[in-house]
Image (cartoon, rainbow, N blue to C red; front, top):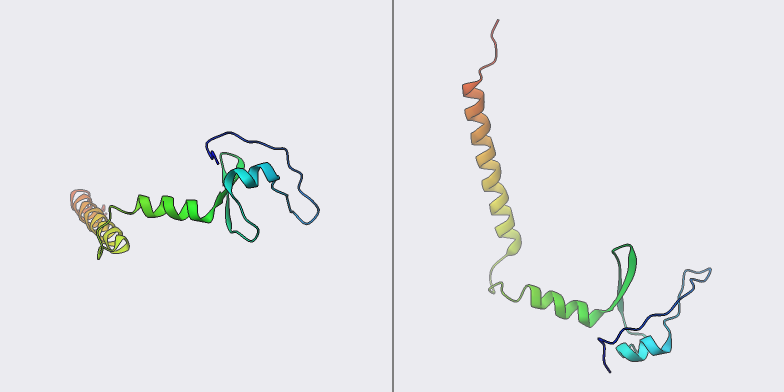
Length: 102
C-alpha cells in the first residue's frame, strides 16, 4: 500500500477520549488490531505513528555512533569542560574587578 498517498478524515472524540481510526487509514498504514502506536503533539496537532516506524527512525538517527561510545558520558564531559571554562572566566573577571574594600 502507498503510505505516501495523502489520506485525511474528520474524527470525533467520545466521552472516554477515544477516537476510531477509519478503515481506509488503517488499511493504508497496515495497522492491525492490538498494534502499538506512538502519539505526540506536533505543530499544534496530534500525530500518530506506528511504533516500528518511530523505532526505525531513531535507530537510523543514532546509527553513526560507534559501539562502545556513551553519548551520555560525552555530553557530561562537554558540560564539565564548559563549566570549568566558565569558572576560569569568572575567576579572571573577579581578579580584574576586585571588590571595593572601603
